[in-house]
Image (cartoon, rainbow, N blue to C red; front, side, top):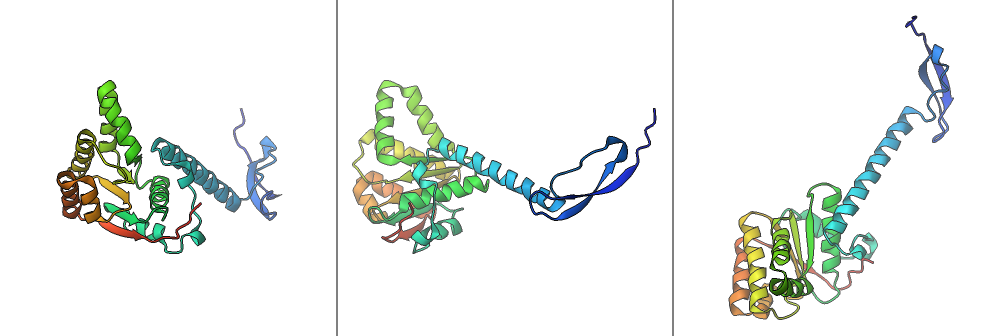
Length: 236
């Protein structure tokens, strides 16, 4: 059997950019050759990888329970560059404070999505504190194993976002749960991002003397970076 193939140069027109390019084919195969030039081929591969990366990040964001409306961002509607401030300090524990509807939750959620897309982190958990603690407290009574799994997930993920902390009064049991999550994560060097309408002192008063001061002391000890989110941030 003859295995000596002759390589010949052929030209073709790229279906993407329209330029002619040269490629080599085995004459005996009578190939029609590629349809896109090497440059466009590289671009196509990069675009495909980027699309796949975005799909994976979106999937991880859904798993992280980041609200879908927080996965979009328009820079022109963030006049105070809140997102940029978060991204610059994203390796730290953060405390985002601002008035109602200032954009704290949206900025934190989108920043976490960016970290998932960049593969800086591989898992996160976005907790809307009031509803999460109510449900966890209910499960402690009716399904303790399920409650334990919820707490474990909050404790072990790469990044935990505690959204709207201080919005409502806690029971003794849910307060202990919140402190347990704070304490374990900080001992393990795992990041926490907090959003609240209250500054550190105001939050301590809102949560009650013992719990509030214990959490505030942890935040001071572990050097939470405070970001003031000014009113007017509009990200939708």
